[in-house]
Image (cartoon, rainbow, N blue to C red; front, side, top):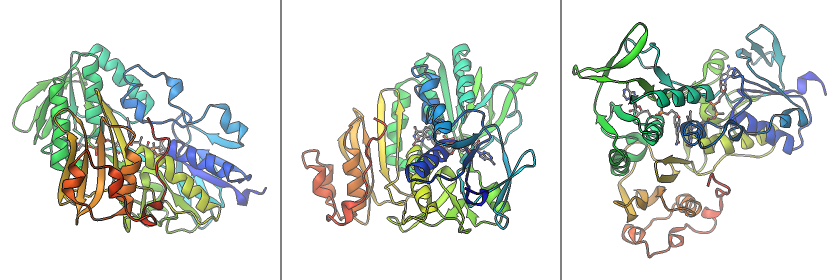
Length: 425
Ligand SMILES: Cc1cc2nc3c(=O)[nH]c(=O)nc-3n(C[C@H](O)[C@H](O)[C@H](O)COP(=O)(O)OP(=O)(O)OC[C@H]3O[C@@H](n4cnc5c(N)ncnc54)[C@H](O)[C@@H]3O)c2cc1C
Ligand SMILES: NC(=O)c1ccc[n+]([C@@H]2O[C@H](COP(=O)([O-])OP(=O)(O)OC[C@H]3O[C@@H](n4cnc5c(N)ncnc54)[C@H](O)[C@@H]3O)[C@@H](O)[C@H]2O)c1
C-alpha cells in the first residue's frame, strides 16, 4: 500500500492504542504508525495512583497490549519520539529530528499535561507530579522514605495519593484552594462524603487555602508556606492541581481549538482528515447536545474506537454516557452522567450515606443527570440507562432503596443506547 494511505496516530497512550486496535479489527491493513514521546509502550494511568503505587500490582499489569502485539498487528510503534509539527495541507507531521511522516488520516491522541504550581520554590527537588509511570515510581519511593507529606489539590490525584500515603502510614496534609474536595465535579452534597472519608483516615484537610511558596534549601523542598503565613513541614510535596489538554500541534496547524481540540460527534476535527480522541478531544456529545471534554479512563478507552471507525468511513459516533471511577481506602465508586458545576437542582441519596454505601443522583428539571454508586456494585449499567433515558422521576421513590432502579428507565427507544460492559470491576 502506498504511503499516502498511511494512518498515523500521535500520542502512544491508552487512546492511541485502542484506536490502533480498532483500525486493525475493522480490517484496515495499510501502514499504521503510532508515535509517542514516552519511552514506554502504551499503558493505563489509573493504577499509577492506586494499586501500582501501593505496590499491589506490578509493572506488567499496566500495559494496554503485550509488547509483541504491535509487531504482530503491523503497528509501527515509534516511542521516545515527539511530534513537533503538523501540516494539514501537505498531510504530514514533523518529528523532533526533522523527519516528516505522511498520512492519509491522522488521529491526535495527545492527552494532557499536569498544570505546574505557579509559586516560588515549586521547581525544587521533592515537589512531585503524577502523570507517568516513572512519576508513580518516584512517589512510591518518596512515601517509603517520608514521615509526612503535603498534597496540593484535593482533586482525583490529590485524594488518591493521599489515600496511598496513609496506607503506608505517612502523615498527610491536603491543601485545597476550594471549599471541598472534588467540588466542581460532585457539588457540595457528595463532596462532603469524600471530605469525611479522608478525615476518618487521619488526613489533615485544609480548604480555602492559598499556597504562596514552597520552602526549602539547597534546591530541596522542606515544606509549604501559605498566604496567611502558616508553614507546614513536609518530606515530599505532591501536586495535583489539574491538567491542560495538549492542543499545541492542533492549534499551530490552524485547527479549531478551545478547551481541547474541537470535534464533531464522529471525533473529526475542523480538518476532514484529522481526528482527535481521549483527554484532548472536546467532542460534540449527541446525548447531551453539546461539546464536552472528558478527562477520564473510560472515555480514553471507548472514544478512540469510534474515531477509528469514523476514520475508516463508517457511520460511527461516540455517544456513551460519561463514566469514571475511583478507589480510595475501602471506598469504591463509579459515576455515570455529566453535570456542569452548579448544573443541578437537587441531589437525591439512596441508601446509607453515613456508612458510605449508597447511590447519589443529581437531578435537573426532574430528570436524572448523573448517578454515583458508592460501595454498591453491579448497578452502574442501570444508572447509565436511567441517565440515558432522561425520564422525569419521582425524587421520593428514587431515594427509596426498595423501589427497583428499573422503574426509572426511560422509554425503550431512548434507553436503547450502548451500556457499559466489562467496566473495571
Ligand atoms: C495517575 C492517574 C490516575 C488516573 N486514574 C483514573 C481513574 O481512576 N479513573 C479514571 O476515569 N481516569 C483516571 N485517570 C485519567 C486517565 O488516565 C486519562 O483520562 C487517560 O490517560 C487519557 O488518555 P489519553 O490517551 O487520551 O491521554 P494520555 O494518557 O495523556 O496520553 C497522551 C500521550 O501522548 C503523548 N504526547 C503528547 N503530545 C505528543 C507529541 N507532540 N508527540 C508525541 N507524543 C505526544 C504523551 O506523552 C502521552 O504519552 C488517571 C490519570 C492519572 C494521571
Ligand atoms: N479517579 C479518577 O478519575 C482520576 C484519578 C486520578 C487522576 N485523574 C485525572 O488526572 C487529571 C489530573 O487530576 P488532578 O487531581 O490534578 O486534577 P483535578 O482537576 O481533579 O483537581 C485539581 C484540584 O486542585 C485544586 N487546585 C487547583 N489549583 C490549586 C492551587 N494552586 N492550590 C490548591 N489547590 C488547587 C482544584 O480546586 C481541584 O480541586 C485529571 O484529568 C483527572 O481527571 C482521574
